[in-house]
Length: 113
Image (cartoon, rainbow, N blue to C red; front, side, top):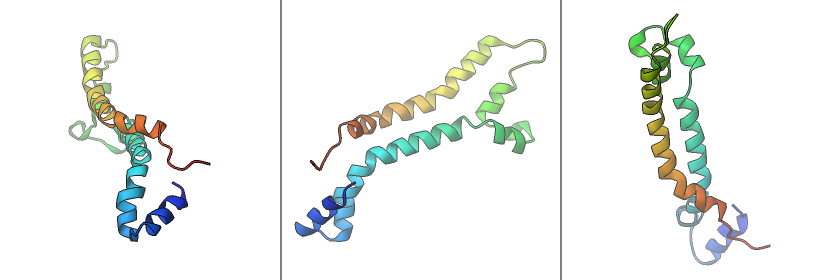
């Protein structure tokens, strides 16, 4: 976000707080939503650290619980596929909710030159 936008807001009579809430924060919403989406997806799909840290099956995350559906000699692929779809739904909902900010971030341009 260019410094000139904040300076233009101050010239128009805005103080630092109103310039932040009315200029800086709305322009940074696409970047913040992308950062939130990446962080949520990374935390949601975390497997290795959860596998090392968690010992009891009652504390397992969904990805570890999905791994427990795999047997030594046989895997129930129907339950595995259903569990995969259930695990995917929250990430899909958050992506669809934040997609309007992602798309607006692509077309965002406020200072020419």
